[in-house]
Length: 238
Ligand code: ADP
Ligand code: MG
Image 1 (tube, rainbow, N blue to C red):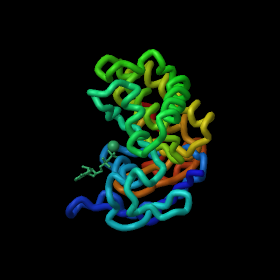
Image 2: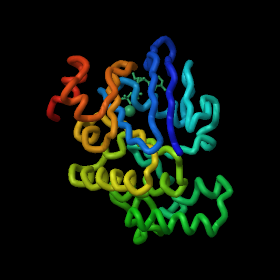
Image 3: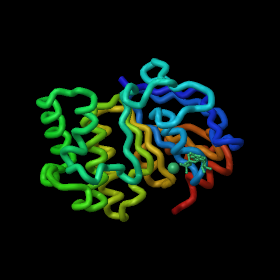
């Protein structure tokens, strides 16, 4: 279970309204990708879903429960950031364990979950290393592993491939797709990359200047863009 509902979410920073009323329904198990140009509000929307930022108005529901005012740890979500956001002083295993320890998960269960997740992501050889001793791709796999061990209902990804080189981008993208197939978890994924959006998404949400321009399956958007903005964004080669 991990459906997501966003109801008329607005967000202003000072006088500037960066989200102008976002409505969206994400089904349990769905892979939804937010695309749009830099500055259109993608990260802000993701952070509001995660509870890292408050909406100015509107509501967020996870599994039908209003979580608008719930702290991040109570939402059943895990987020993966562009910059990995690992603790530099902790080794890989402890980075993965920290959130579980804080949630009071028993040690044996932590071991079991880290074992399963590190096997799934081929992280076993690196468990004793610190982030500085890993490549960018390995760091991002650790960040994904750290999300995985929490067994969230909903995964949020904010441009997770942006700091990786081209070959790693493809590999990591395939790993995320495999993860989605295995776990059947709901995933909401932000990118400004059309290829990522077209290959990963069940549905794409095209954002522009704080509004939803169009929502649809990749080929639907590609074949029947609602307007020139969508046509330019989905249709144009990188
Ligand atoms: P995206 O992720 O699509 O590139 P963001 O959600 O990061 O866009 O930002 C949307 C707009 O909100 C941008 O104009 C950005 O400068 C502004 N913004 C984001 N966070 C803050 C903040 N904490 N304070 C003020 N302005 C912000
Ligand atoms: Mg962003």
